Amino acid sequence: MRPSLPVLIALAAGLGACASPGSQGVAVYQSAPGITEVLSGPIQAAPGHHLVMGDLNIPANAPIPRHYHHGEEFLYILGGSTVIVREGEGEMTLLPGQGVRIAPGTVHWGKAGPQGLRAVSSWVVPDGQPLRVAVPDQPGGAH
Image: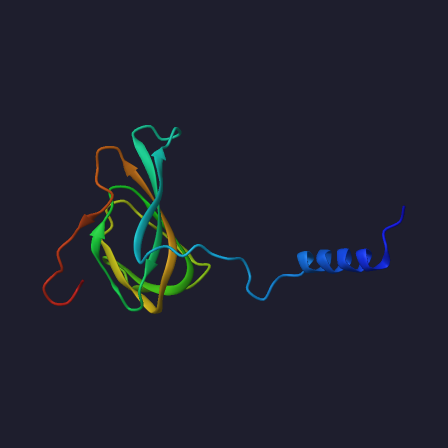
């Protein structure tokens, strides 16, 4: 038994719609503003350390206070932008598709860009240490 012409046309239209990228692209989960921890667990290849992954959803021009981590941070920008400053280095602007590794103990700070910041960050944290250590602003403007 052969399918009827209307069934074939509907099937072809459906397959064509599946093959064509939509104008909206892939739907992206929208987290609450701030930093949301989404995953955490031990790293078998690095005993004594665990991984923490965060979803960053920072409002436009919001400051990122001075701080450091006891382990590495890996930051990847999904949307918006950010300006990051690592102590002893100049400002670095990161745009969607760009990332940076921040070495353990490096004091850094910054701010979200004019459209805000959407990013994922992963931290390798030595067991027993806090994820983030705040560093007071320095007199004279570094923050």
